[in-house]
Structure formats: structure tokens, C-alpha cells
Length: 192
Length: 192
DNA sequence: GAAAATTGTTCAATATACTAAACATGTACA
DNA sequence: TGTACATGTTTAGTATATTGAACAATTTTC
Image 1 (spheres, each protein chain N blue to C red):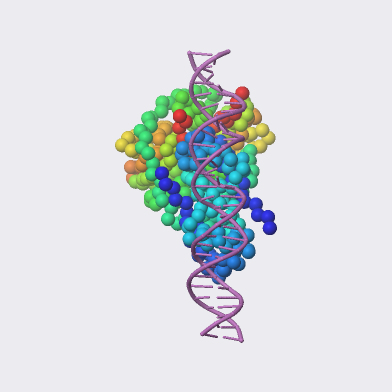
Image 2 (spheres, rainbow over the protein chains, first blue to last red; image 1 turned 45 degrees about the horizontal axis):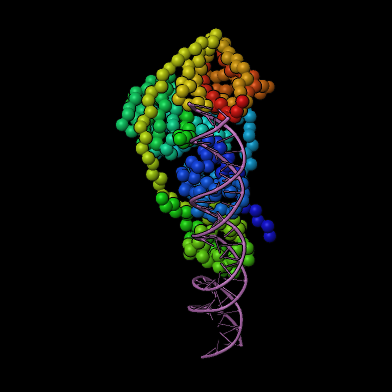
């Protein structure tokens, strides 16, 4: 019986290239030698689960993402309508609704959300992976963004860029006015 | 740095026992030696992805079911200084106001705009470099986006992704309602 | 009760995953 | 140019995953 394991090499290489990571950087980050990475990407070896696990951690993806034999259809024109029940991120913060704008399979290192705040609501976020940046545009109302010990009061049309590898939060202090922000999250490590 | 792969041994053993399968039977069914199965279940070895794949087939489960780690350790992040607030610029184009959210020096391959449309206004764009993509979110009103021969009618909250290396345009056909879109332009890292 | 079959665990041998270092091939920079 | 650096590949050696067989421990069958 012939069993073909999934082509994880292609997946790893695709994700690494999309994130603009070199073999050396991914090697340092994952703890797997760059020689091994090269051989895995070119399907020269059958890597161990532990190794693929480390690589997944280094790429900040789920292990399943590397093992999936996903033939991704590269669509030219993709529409995500607002009215329907699109994918929503669940939050434990009351009064905050996060709508996922970008389908994940199109871009691996970019995610976009439309976040709506009711009166007196707050979104608290855990630190993301180092090098991750968030690009925030206030679409409606006003919010207070806190990143570490820095705080900024933003109004409609304001734009803010910040590194979000530390604890950060977005709050709408108005009790009457709702607020809405557009957010782009980029998972791109700094090159050195 | 020690990274612990998920305890697949317990998962395999649990599934095998639930199915009342012996090591010999699972060995025949999966093509993995029973010695290997025993060692994997008792966490004495780090199995290869290919073998775990075979075992999953033998158990008739998804590969992810074996790799699922319920007690996944939380990642520890390093601390970076928070970002600064970005400057703002403005440019005009006949009934269309383009606000540049992200200055060029912050990100080399990403640009963000907030584009406002008066009644009956239209923004025509020349083809960009090959591979360039645009991520469009309608913030207010409704617009009609045309990319090549494709056309879409977008309303508030809608999201659209398209390759813009061909002629494309955004139009607000309403004479009374203004419109506004948030746009992210991503330049492909390709040469020439 | 003992032989035989069944089940899971170790053992020695082999195949190969994994690594560090050298290598090849650019790319930038003076 | 030349020199340095940067990136991916190949090599040689080591660590270990994998296997067939032997082993122990339990259950079955007469």
C-alpha cells in the first residue's frame, strides 16, 4: 500500500517566502538547522513531528496548516459581503464585534478586521508574535488605544501604527457614541 | 530552548483502545511495526510525520486528531518599544479625496488610504506593477468597483480583494450619498 | 494444571533524520 | 573591479527513528 504523506515542504516554503524570512532567520526562530529546513522544503527527507512542530511555532501557524495538502485557488476577485453572516471573531469583551474582512487563504501575513464598539466597551488583546504590527484607522467615533504604557486618543479619520507584541487594548469611553475601527495586522518579523 | 511536541502517544493509545485494536492489528492496518507503535505510545521516540500519517490512516482519523495538543503552552514574547503616531497627508482628485494614512517610510510594500467620494464621483487608476493587490473596505455609502471586465457593487462593510495590475476604477453613482472606502495597497516583492 | 495463543515490551541492527561546517552563488558596497 | 556579506545547497558525521526478532506477562484451551 502506497501512502503519500502531505507535501509539507511546499507549505513551509510558501509560508516562509510570504513572510520574507530567510532560512537563517527561520532556523534561529524555530530551533531547526537551516540545512534541515532546506532539505525539508525540497522534500529530501521525512521530517519528524517534533521538527515540524518547531517550524510551525517559528512560523506562528498551527501545525495543521503545514500538514494540510491545500490546493489554494488564487482568486483574482474575491468579495466578502457585509450583510451576510460572515466569519466573526469571538471576543470575551462585551460590546465588541470583530468582523474578519480578509479570507485567510489569500494572504498569510496580512489580516484585516472591522471592529465595532458599543458604548463603554473595551477590547483587550494579548501580545502577538514579535515584529507584528497593527495599522489602525478610526472609521467612526473615537477610541483610546493603549499599547504598553503609551496611550493615544484617536478620533474619526485618525491613523495609528504600533507594534503589538506587548499587551494592548482599544477602548470606547463614550457611553452614547458607538465607535468603529479598521485594523490591518501584519505578521512580519523585522529583518536584521 | 526546549520545545515539547504534542503528546501524540496518548492520543494514539486512546484511539486504539477505544476501537479495541491490538498493536498487531493496527500494525498490519497502518503498515507501521508494532514495536514502533509501542514506543510511540510510550513517548520513547519522536516519530516521523510519515509514520504518524500512516497511523492516522490506520485509525481512520485525520492527522490533526493525533497531533491535537489540548494543553498547549502559551508562547512568551519579548518586549519592544511601542510605536509612534503617523503623520497625515492629503491629495485631491476631482470629487475624490484621498487621505494617505501610512507614510512610505514606515512600510516599504504597504500603503493605506482613506478615500472619500462626493456624489457622482469616480476614481480611475492606471495599472500598477504586476502582482500588486488592493484590499478595499467600504466604510460609508456604496461604490461600484470595476477591475478589468469584472464589476462589483459594494455597500457599507463589504470587503473586496483584487489584483490591480490592470485598469481599475471605483465609482460612487449616488448623487446624494457620499461614500468612503478604506484601501490597503500591497506591492508585490517581485523585481524589475 | 500445562501448552499454546495473545498482547505489550525490549534488543540488536539498520535506515535515515538531523546537525555543523564547507560550499556555491549571488548581491551590495567601497 | 575587488571585498565583504548574505542566502540557499551539499557533505560528512552523529543521533535516533524504525524494524524484525526475542522476550515477558497474561489469557485461552484442552
